[in-house]
Image (cartoon, rainbow, N blue to C red; front, top):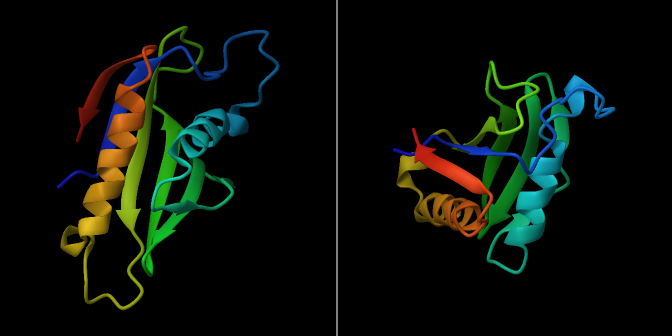
Length: 128
């Protein structure tokens, strides 16, 4: 089952020296970028929120809810071409149905993959 997708790009702020960014803000630009490119699809994206490990966003469709996590991979801070990860998990309200039981989750994974694949400045897209 697909749990996360990782990729390499120079599109987002990785904490490059003199960029003026705070480390707790890393991943916010990635979250906003993905949300902007995913609009108009069957999924409704909320506003990204800061967490202890990066940024998250809640995504919903047809009564199901998912959480996307956005973050910089360890050892990649400050790199011109940094390694990033987006995690995808289903929010289980009743604990009866896991994320593997959701066709919507598969479509959300496809949407994220296609958005990343269509950007020419993103390389090495891998599911894990």
